[in-house]
Length: 145
Image (cartoon, rainbow, N blue to C red; front, side, top):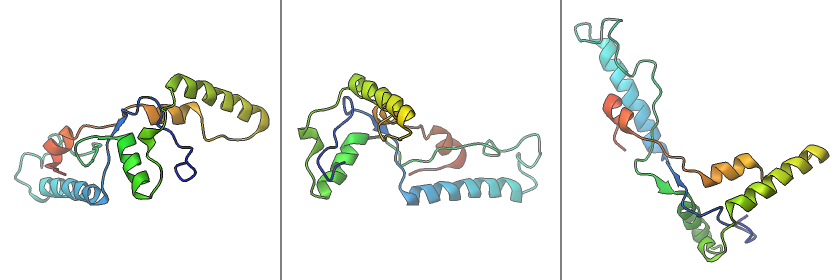
């Protein structure tokens, strides 16, 4: 962990993620409610016919803060703000090594009944890009972060 100095960057450290501040999340919900309210409150618009519903009806939308962020830069900023050691000054753990150790942890965990924090799923989640497009929310809900 960061507090005891053992946390390291997994892989290259270039993982990109989408973040969402709670105000933007609430704003996205309000945009969805406004769009659906506008299409159901008027009987003369194009969406009042049940065969021509607004695209937002029954749809799933991703709401984020907009531009994706570097995961490890964000984590490092928080770690530095708490007064801990800079992650970028430490060696990065190679993905192949992390997967190897994670699978060993799974095997040992299976044999002993213990659950380890390091597992293949966690390695994958900390080394892949996890960002989303706002295009549909901007188009259908008129959402802007």
